[in-house]
Length: 374
Image (cartoon, rainbow, N blue to C red; front, side, top):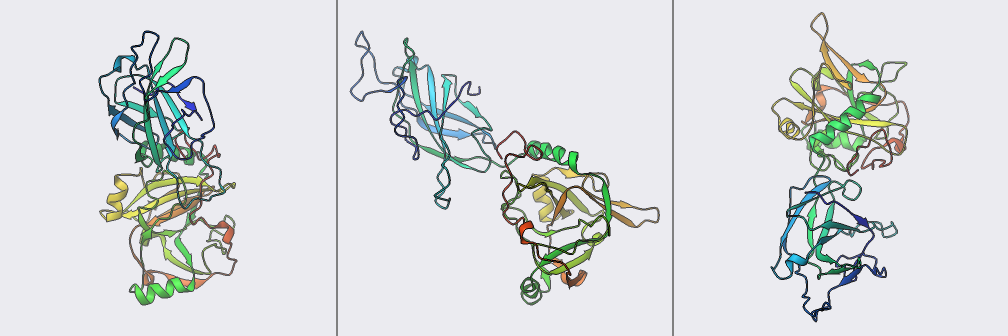
């Protein structure tokens, strides 16, 4: 059963979680005294404190919680108070406004209880949780137990259900398809020198950064090499500007993208601008990257999707198209030999403001957000 009610910014006098608002007093919430508070007939006992709290069935915006209780006064329990807080990040900006703690108020339902809510749970986020039992009095006040021990847990990544919702949103704005012939990757001179001298002339996969949606299952986990394929509308060729470096590696599209390659949707996001980005993953069939993506990402038909296609023409050759109205970031999951393409200097500018390295998604954008934690 899901929690039937919630309240924000409510604390009982001995809330255990650091960062709670300590000067807030509520007449309707009273802590049980240690010396056995008494009712009018003198028979009231302390309420049992939840013990051995267990968290299970964790998703990006829900979890199940249960605990053990002593039998004493158990029949008096009418509600549970669940104190939920984001775990403090020691590396966070000390001037940033602190997250407001959340107190969930639930009727005393059979356990385990499901706690669900995208307005207070975010994916890939560490939380602390503690529980009180409570008894609602005839005058509307509450008598509550002491707090339980504090338990820590971390919410999960987006599931394929959530990623399919993002995929559908991205399809709406993808626009018409433009033909292209090469994938390209811009970097600095030192990057390519290192590939030649230390990596046997190969560009090697590295772990994806934390750019994009906070709940993306590929951030910090999938290894790959970023490529671009977008072209300029008037020339049909790659743009001559880049935020990543003045040297550009170009490789024929069919080297990385062909019928032996699987294509996956990875993410859809923006960075407080009008530009929207779609992350796609190219994984050679049967590769380790392919196995990773099969378990976590929606697969796309390479010949029929709204973002990136590979089709055979009448003569048996491969023809490639990309979506016009989104910026594609393509991750290739295997090493790429520099001998397969060319490295040359671009004639344009290095536009650092366009970099998406560790870029944070705009949580207020209605175009690229879904109704789960950002």
